[in-house]
Length: 291
Image 1 (cartoon, rainbow, N blue to C red):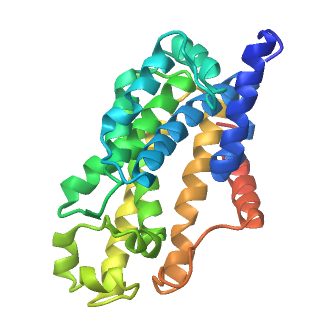
Image 2 (image 1 turned 90 degrees about the vertical axis):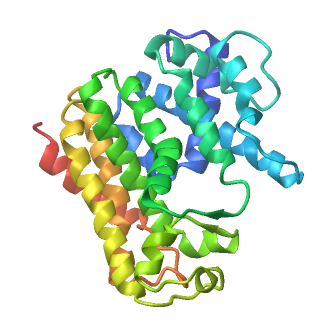
């Protein structure tokens, strides 16, 4: 930050503020990164968050939401000039994108996924859910690979595994909240196999063989985290690897209280306390400090 112009440094600080407010787990994990990498990560997060906000604003006006809602923003982000009020993060992102060679296509795919959340959602198959996970989370994993200094094609599938695991965790944690917004991401064909009815989810209650169904979903999420682990070793040693290990551990850790509650995600939004995050973070640091 010391070598940046005052305006650019201020832009990176604006991105940091957005990340601190909206991505607390990621912000916590980011502190093992070097300052330059950390602030690049904040710039990328600020752009992703702003795509999400742009979609929300259109939906709140009752207008039809299409991925193109983020198109003008991405033109400004990947080209020069025309920043708007509220986009104080934009110069920082533009600087980051030029240096790290993040692909614009990943942000366009993210916009498609976010736009799909604007109305009722009722995914039918695992393939649909897998595509959704790529769009809203896997793309972010690919972006962060570049921020962390890796462009190894062999690591990309592992980044997608981690994004998939994290998004599945979000979905399992937020079943009730999503249902209130008439969004059901858990595939209908799998729900049918366990007798889980959409109408009961929308009413905020379990049905059928709910525990067995959720046990299957939790196991699937944990398998994604396991598959992601070899990819973490492909990242540059030091802070990049440690930060991703933290994210993997903290997100996977949310599955533990979900499981311990008997898969009651209707009365409680399960999370880790700051103390639990610190304990898990110290454990990861201790196990990985010499890697």
